[in-house]
Image (tube, rainbow over all chains, first blue to last red; front, side, top):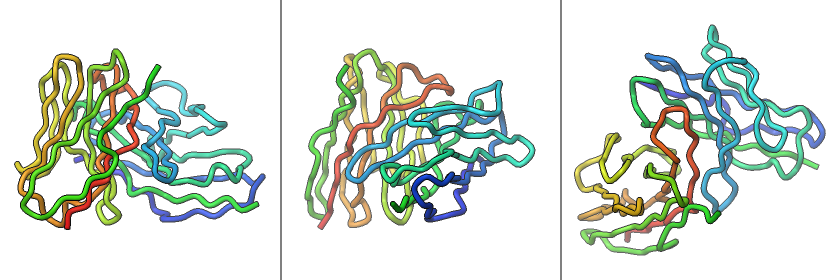
Length: 114
Length: 114
């Protein structure tokens, strides 16, 4: 069965510092991994995805994520955080055998302090 | 291009009633998925429709049903509402239901069951 874990409920970082939001996954087939962000009273917005190929994936708003197959992780990173990055971040996974069914992590709330 | 739209945005119902939520995907998108978001359970996959056919289904009781029309618009129905059905219901569309496609989310319908 597919599963996603986001071990931190909340991440606090100062503006200008690098940020990392952690995600680990479990799938039976090849993983297709996604990061989404949710702002208050809004739906989710797509940030980036890993399908295959280069382990470092670059996405929207300066975010990137590194796929690590041996550690089954897909951590979201940004070199320099902005106050406007404060939001709820979701990691999601599909595997090739499960069709389009998408499993989301519990979410990590990011607070960026000025 | 217009985004995913959901109607209504807010809904208040009482236990035992039924409710129908509507979703219009991005023009050209043929896959529509529904999710339930609650503070306790997070984001949970309900079902996915592609070309008027339900392709994938999550672990929800039969009270939750949906359909998709020939113009890709989708409706979700919940019968015999329970207090625990109070949630934000999110609709997401995708160009196809290929596993590597990201989804575009609507703002959600917030359902309150009294």
